[in-house]
Image 1 (cartoon, rainbow, N blue to C red):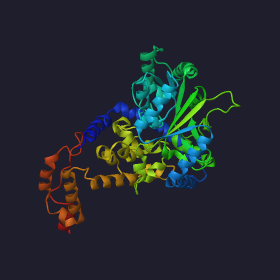
Image 2 (image 1 turned 120 degrees about the vertical axis):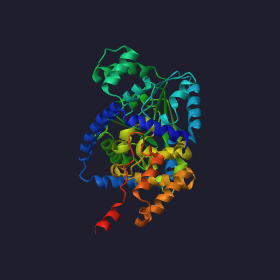
Image 3 (image 1 turned 45 degrees about the horizontal axis):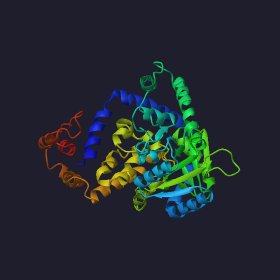
Image 4 (image 1 turned 60 degrees about the vertical axis):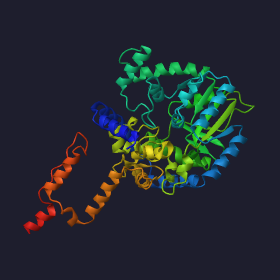
Length: 456
């Protein structure tokens, strides 16, 4: 058993029985459930919208090389510099070089899971550049010394009381401050930083191939200020974010909003096509787009799992997942948690070390049901499990046990070969099979089928 799997089991057992954590997550996700249910009901034919979105993303992924080259060509024509990064190290080296070339001291950053994937903040600070999160949720977890807990709502694991206590500790704000007070407090801090920043870093919700532009969607306006105020704008985006045309946003943006937050449309939606023109006074003087692979090509080459690259990061599968609701985001020990994270993390971080995440699933299918782009998520988790067995990544004892299970359950008479007393003795060999909170049930002396035959 890998160290990562041992840690996952240990952490999940601990957090699943943390009643305070469960109450916080239940409350926060329940608010999302109500909003998202209302958002989806705005569609007269949601199934048709999902079918169309699935088709668009399938088209983009199936022809990914073609659309990426089209994006690069058009982006360069717009005045941006496109940098291809094979892995996290190449992306970090590119960012560090840009910062050094421009003698940057302060970097402001809008919410981006891709930058979390490559641990941008730590590497930027390593060369003496301050990196500041400007999304409120990201800012909260940054000052707490934590990572995002959820791909859409970074501070979902914190209650308003937790956040009030944190700000009182870090900034001496009044005890029991309201969310409104703290929001205004952070706004005042960040506005000054925006005007001082040398570089702004964003991700991209979509890369628009036919325009060579990026699309950003947000609720706070911080992303808009991140790419507007500094003289340098750096975009870091996974290669899977591409869509063929700008008109596709008319479908994708509302669908993302409805499934992510329940909104009809997100508050701020921006299309950025390059640095400022000679006729423009405001905006960045330089724009760099870093296209990150980081094992996405490996996933792309899989016949059964490549569709996971269609994901638009709405977070719907996390909010629907019974496992995520119980073990939380940090237990996964990965940038991307929940069902989608359990599929892609083994490819991004090492299949042998992280394939256990694919078993953190009850195969209820709720994730597949809610996905706005029709990714068969629970099937892909089963494909990952299959590949783990084929690769020899599962323990010998487990494999032998499953073979025995298969043999026994193929025919009822095989199950009846051993009586209840013997089954109970075998069960005592592994009394903690269901964890230390549950005990194995006691088998009757005779199976139901035998009892039925004896009575009739």
